[in-house]
Image (cartoon, rainbow, N blue to C red):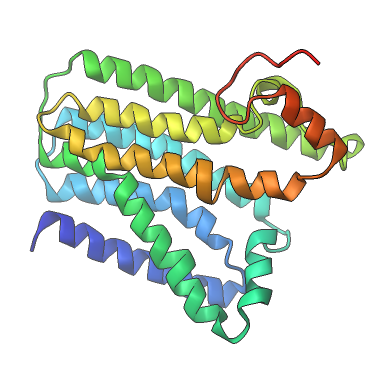
Length: 255
């Protein structure tokens, strides 16, 4: 069977498992934990089904570091708490169509996006090479910047929220002083870094679908827009918007 088709079928089964788990747990936000772990699964399966290479092992290590940190962060954030407000709202809005729409719009659709985003990784596995070059170094550097922004941004926000004195307040310090979504900036940047690593190989430009997909999702669909909408209209948030870059970290504007 075709290499890409096998991975797609396995990914579909993986997302179906998490859908069943969501029914058992009665919370759809388990999909957020499945996200990072799904990348790890497909990365290592892709390497197993292809010719092992040093570059393949290298990018799998990066994906594993990213995916495990993200999954653990989301699990710790959600454990012993109510279902995430986004999924709770859909549970109410979708009514009798909730289970069908959850399976298609949350799990299968997320699986499709995951499959598109991970294309640079599975391309690397299918084009083995053990010779490292300048694109590998640049890609690792870009990935490292992204990992710093995502992990540090998440950690700073967690510390801020855990302080009862900050209840109801906005996070405006640390990396959040330079970007309203530094963690999202970091996630997107990491996938551009992995794409740059793939450029070490011939014809890898076609895998640009990966970083483009995550960029569009975060900036225009499920990431930034939902949070911006959640806080829209609050005087403190509107003031924060006027002085702080929405995505790319930049010095705050003078008021």
